[in-house]
Structures are given as structure tokens and as C-alpha cells.
Image (cartoon, rainbow, N blue to C red):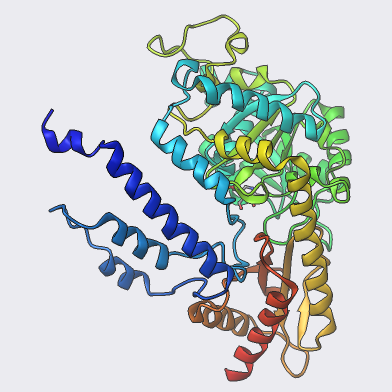
Length: 475
Ligand SMILES: Cc1ncc(COP(=O)(O)O)c(C=O)c1O
């Protein structure tokens, strides 16, 4: 091998650069904590494109590029980041990522990740146990969208009434699942990836708090069947992305049990409430789910992408992916006996050592740490909602059930207009003072806050309302 290629693997260069990179990141954490940098250093997308050209001549200073990347990124560790549900990861978990990146164990089969395969198996069992899925197991996937697809493929195979995986979905009647109008788009996307079409996700109405109305399931199913579809399952959101609403799982599970349907719980964000004694009740009935998706990069403080896809009966997830590949799998008659060859039940072949950060964090900080974190964010959200309600120029969309709060500005006559919410949001984000998002609800556009950063305080949230009001007055 030519010398300069080998030289890139020099351990001493790595040591020196590694120390410098950790210094850069530690300085970044300090500056973010002091609110001494913009949350989102906004620039127009086209301008950003021009600022990051490819220079393939080599010879650049890598630390300089990384320092710039840190400066010019969205700063999720800033206490005034209250935007989308991607967490400010634990620094410890970020260190684990570095180790995982260098080791690069591919995880498709046991030999390509012996330590991480064992850690993953045990972590997933621990998570399933926390949800009350006593003998449950599962896999880690690259994100909740992949997790939902993984679970829904198992739902299809178990409940379609024909071998949709082996013979093809066209061999039977068109399929469908029932899910609330508020379900995350990845559920509908999974349905469309499976070829069921847009109408394969049958919307079930929600109540005035955006929770699925169980009494409407039968009507939704009848409508699907009238179109000649076979309904295979129901998706419950725990919670819904837009407003943080928890669907009632027991009645959904009752409905499924009576009809041989598969209850799936999308707990990408909310399943972590299982770790808080005070908030676990929101998930009542989750132990009756056939599958659950639980993101680690949301309320478990892990770097993205990291999701657990859990099954009450782990064997069902192998049936969804039954396949031969002699260069990888040993072709065991019961693949679940070879649980250690993970790719037999994942969309992914090569997979990052996703588990490492959470395994490390759990071992270092303990389960209570996560319960306290989750409870802390929910408490802060409740306090923020009360503050919104106490101000005459704001309206709360709905009492928060967890750490997501939607609110909007009211005009002098108590009216609200969508453009004002969007304009104020854009200006505040562009100023770098906060990063917040918005959502459209039946009553109109609302500003949306997710309290996900442990360093966000009551004062930060009061300052957010002040900033929104001041920006509106400037309009
Ligand atoms: C309820 C819910 N499900 C699924 C997803 C998709 O997860 P991911 O972004 O990890 O793909 C999200 C993302 O916010 C979500 O809120």
C-alpha cells in the first residue's frame, strides 16, 4: 500500500486530533450552556451550498473544518433549542459513538459484532421488560421510521391471511391498517412502501385532545372492508408527534383481540415515559401490544439514529423477512434460534453499533436518571403550558400530556392568524435566539415546543414567550 494511505491510520496523529476534537466539543458544550451562541445560525439554503464547496485537492486542516461545522450547525445542546424531537445527546453517548465509528462492527451477523450483538439483545430485553412485554425481544433499527416499517412488515405477515412476503402482496386482497388522523407520517409511508396505497392507512377520528376515538375503529374498519380491503392491525400513537397525545391503548388492544388484529404502538417519543413512575400511566395497556417502536434518540438522550423495535413474540419478526443468503445466514429452520444473526430480522444489512451509547449511559447513570429526565421535561412542559394560559395574548392548543406544547399568539381582539405565527417563528429562528417549530391543527397554525434538552429552564421558556410577543409587536 502506498505510504500516504497507511499514514492516515497513524495512532499518534489520531490521538492528537482526538484530543483536539474533544476540546472543540467541550468548548462548544460550554458555550451552548452559557447561551453564548445562536441556536440555529440561519442562512439561506442556497447560501449554505456555496459555503460548503467540495475541494478534492486535499491538504485542508480537518480541525478547522470541524470547528466550522460545529459553529454552523443547529445547536441542539443550546437550552433554547425547543424544536423537533431530536435530543441533545449525552456527551458520554457521543463518546460511545466515536468508539462505535472506529470499530465499525457491521452487526449483520454475530461475528460482525459479537460484543454489540450481546449488548443489544440484553438492552432490547430490558426495554421490553420495562414496557411489560415479559418475554418480548426485538432489534435496534436506524430510526423510528425504519422501526415502524420493520414492525408493520411483521404485522402484515402475521395477519394478512396469506404469505404476503413470499408470494407477494398482490396474491391476496388489498390490505389496510387503522391509525389515527394524527399518526406520524412514517406509518403511512410504511403502508405505501408495502404497496397498499394511500388508502391502506385508514384514518380514525380523534377527540378534542387529539387522541384516537376507539368507538370509531369499527366504522373505519367497515369502510375499508366495503372497499374490499382486509384490515390487519391498528396503530396507536404514544404519543402523537404534533401535539403529544397518547391514544388509549387498552380499548385499542381489546378491539384487536376480539378480531385477531395486530396492535402496534408507535412509542417513538413517548415510550420513555415507562421509566418515570409518575408518568408511566400514560402508557397503560402497552404491554398488550404485538409490537412497539421506541426511539433512543428522542427521550433516551442517544445520538441519532437509534430505535428499538420490540415484539411481544420475537419469532414473528423473522417471518416478515424470511430469506436465504448463504454468504451471510446459516439458513437455520428456526432463525429465532440464531437470534445472534441480527440481519435476519432487519431492513438493514450492515448496521451501526447503535446500542453502545445507551448501554454505556444506562450502566453509568442508571435507569432512574432517565426517569428523572423524562419527568423533568414533562414537568417543565406543564409549567410552560400554565404560563401560556396566564398570558392574555397567547392560546394553548391543548393541555400537554408530556413534553410537547402547542400554543399560538392572539391578536388584540383575541383572534389568531396563521401568517403571524409562521412569520414570528421564521424571524425568531433567523435571529438565532431560539429554535422552535410549528404545526397545523384543525384550528390553524400553532407554534410547537418540545422540551427535550435537560438544560432548558423556566426562564428560557418565559423568555421565549417574551420574544414571540415582542416579534409580533414588531410586525
Ligand atoms: C411518533 C413518531 N413516530 C415516528 C417518528 C419517526 O422517527 P425517526 O425520526 O426516528 O425516523 C417520529 C419522529 O418524530 C415520531 O414522532
